[in-house]
Image (cartoon, rainbow, N blue to C red):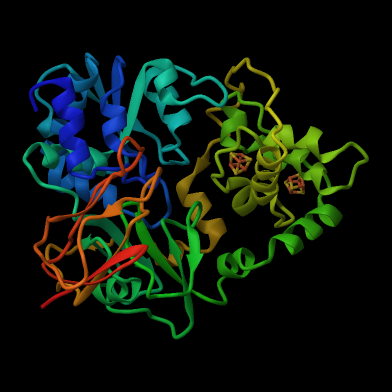
Length: 441
Ligand code: SF4
Ligand code: SF4
């Protein structure tokens, strides 16, 4: 990568998107002007260890990715945020650091230390303005796997695989590079299969992921992990409650104890998020919901209020989701407090991950998910054309066509925000619709 334009173009060609779960096309961030690049290695979703493995095994690429982005954006400094408890990753990255332009920032084992607002504050002392993004304070944040992909893009390698952890109620928890489009069923098989007959899978994590029962669904560029749990597990039972029931229970049982607000990480950082007030939007006060919804606008959907803080097992996070959706639907603007000042108890009230896992009832699944270097290639992969933020990619291939691993099979429609997609296995294109199906052969 020689020039700034080259860097963004190389990243665009390789189809790199935010691998931490957001899926934002990485070439857009590479074209920004900032003074700091932060590598997000905080990884705080319980039981997921894929970023840890990326850092242990590919620290040099992560550092290279940080430097490439520093050059592209003109940033004089890079910071890699890693939890201090992840000693092997800290050691590997420390060994890969040569020079003072990139440094390490050690983080405590709290949830959600990977939230961009928190990470930027922890690493730089800067507070992102309400409703803002890191760019507003001169920072670009990228997940460590995204930086690894950027480093590989510079060597001409497109994104064909996704680092994932498969854990929970499986026989052998494991982390591996899954070919994009691999079915959940095939991914679970790499972990020895489910350990219980009836299960559901949290895609992307227990706290912020979605619950899935259809194992024909596939790994995409944003899948951080698959956490299988028995259908009788409290997390699945709660998640399966219809929104109507969640809100009805909240309306009748919320006693306004404020625990959800007092433990909310965004509130503690100084933002005007107050889930206990959002609960009032469910209709147990006479003031209209539009007023109370305002307190949901800066919520990052971390799930802590619902899954950890509320002593009544209510759903304040879901009330915030509803509040944000209502505001969008009715075109209501956020008019809350713009001043941001961390709470006096910011340090003391953070949620330790171990404590969180205990409350979630998943401590028994907290085993190392050993890295598997090679896995059998799946017979078939299904590559959705929409697996990133922006416009779905446009297919470049037709049914019956032979492709090799790494062939670009879908491109960004002219001038739109999006990402290219590349074949993750060699084989024959079987169908092209909203996804491209490729089978070995
Ligand atoms: S913690 Fe639960 S009961 Fe207390 S205010 Fe929040 S939602 Fe209501
Ligand atoms: S989900 Fe709850 S705890 Fe998390 S930011 Fe939103 S209101 Fe705060």
